[in-house]
Length: 245
Image (cartoon, rainbow, N blue to C red; front, side):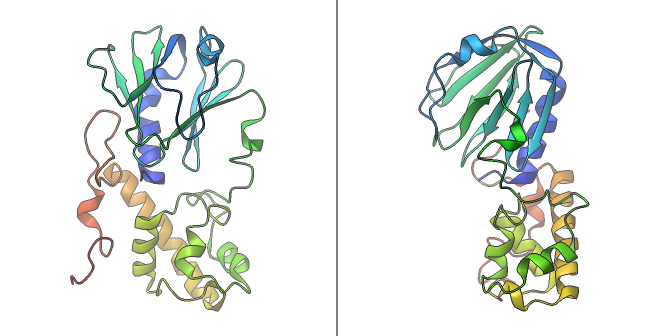
């Protein structure tokens, strides 16, 4: 599943090609994603301009004239910027055409991704409003983690993977950060000291920043928007290394 570094890498990859550009048309081939793509989205988006390409947690936000297009990559989704619409595959569900000649293509073999439209405040959307802070922001630190963990018997790995506590720390990066911080993943969150929580917050930031610098982690499904893989998987210390040193 694409995690925060992969989604942010995708955002950075598509941004230069579509930000500030007008949508000329949208082609929806399959509406049956995790939530069905609304009828009439094609007409809604036509001639609107994408003013900003942002990210909140794992949701990409294309901020347009009349609202925001939310895109979630799900388990196997990806976005690519193409110069034409040739070679359409059976998993290429949506093409967004821009006046500058580029096509933003959404591909998702498992169809667990989502393309949603909202005309309300995007940050108050039901899928976003309850989310915790961004892990690379100043609002996320050891003190925050320590206070949120008080009285919690939940395993620390499960705790930091909870999007209401902090967003974007998925399985791979939770494993790596806990290893670097020297914390057993099954230890109860409420029993971890303030000093250890500070170390964990720092390690989460370090792991995510390193993954971003490497272009995300390539497993089976993820490719960057230019079609090239990320390389952080070569540097994983513990994920996928059961019974190995």
